[in-house]
Length: 142
Image (cartoon, rainbow, N blue to C red; front, top):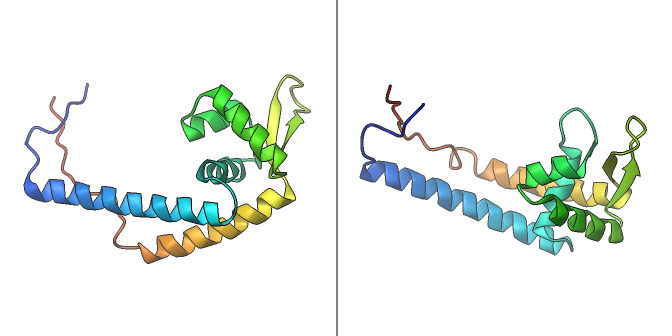
């Protein structure tokens, strides 16, 4: 079993972690504001992103979305319902397994997501070289 570092963190390590968390929070705040200006909540944006970005297909199940959002399944069901009411997503019964429900983007959801993803790409490019995983040396004890 791996342990934490065998050496204590020094001042530089704390500064690096602080800068990383600051840049992360700045990006999150940008993302939240961009979603709200588009008329959706930050969580609705993440739902759209995780549907479109699900590996290997253009839909996801509620369970898969709950995992991606790190949320409870019943909360994601409510989120999907709110997004359905806004015509951002739609539920479809799976052709492969009639018990499974697939969540797909609607045209409006695609438009909103494409616009927001473009803004996020620009913001990420502006953070290039600033927003990086901190180099904190962690030595494993054996």
